[in-house]
Image (tube, rainbow, N blue to C red; front, side, top):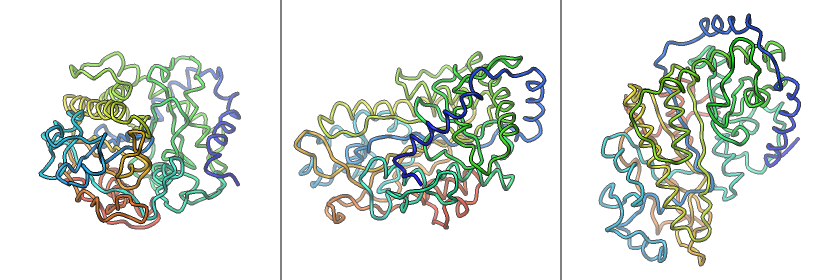
Length: 431
């Protein structure tokens, strides 16, 4: 049994065991030809809905993101970090965006952004790692517990999206038989949210690392990096598992190369790292890659000191990058089949600290962007006077209500089978 804090070591150990597989493995031409047949057998028609997850790591200060500018308690608790009423980008008569969130403000004006206020879960955990594990596993009882990542069948050992992938695979659901059902673009190990017991989820630092030669080129270690992490005891035999993963990678690689070669969008992205990842995702969607889930992360939100400038920059990166991405997929004709979900593991304290920063809190806003979101604020901003026992904002929307709506209404997967129980849908989508 190993604890959640040992997941990184577990993944590194597992990946190390795959070194012989992932280093210099040649792909014979007959397998390359078979890849096209395999893809043709189970592939769905273009047009499937895609979910793009943007994780804000570190605990975003929701109070200075969606600002209750009309509440006098905000001004009393934020002396140095206060954003004035005349500075906010108003959402309604009570709340407004941080002034650097022009992109989100424009998305809201275009009815392409939902602002879900007061999101959290019971008995909030204020540890970065444990709270993020709760969001990733969709299991508030997972924090601090030990588990066996190869044997457990609970949410403790895998992620909510990973369980969805496995469920779809077993039930021949909407993600079954696809070349790469999910993809993580980032430099670190696979997020727990994407860890599955039976489904391979690759991760890549960049699209360039995904390129393969279909006529006998070698697979790089990054190509099968996610495969090893997702291959537990009850997975198909290793030879068949790896063979199918290789074939899927080859077939997808050709689409990736096409995406890099034939980018036809005039949309200009800002020069941020997040923007570059989202631009690549827009290219992949447009190239016909059948991936249904894309996952990226933006770090830096643990703003305990000198928060103002750093937080403003992060909000600019998030807001402008997502705006460019939504504009891009709209130009390419995919707006109504793309949904962006942006979340953080918790919010910050109501009162700023003595270091001109904020400490770990609880409830915070969550954002969804796309052509089918219920635009505007959803739920009231949490009260700054009616607080929890720790003096933090109380949540009113369980994040699993958002997940349930996405699973049932967007990805077409039974949310109860994934989350372990039925949750009322948060009103985030329109038909």
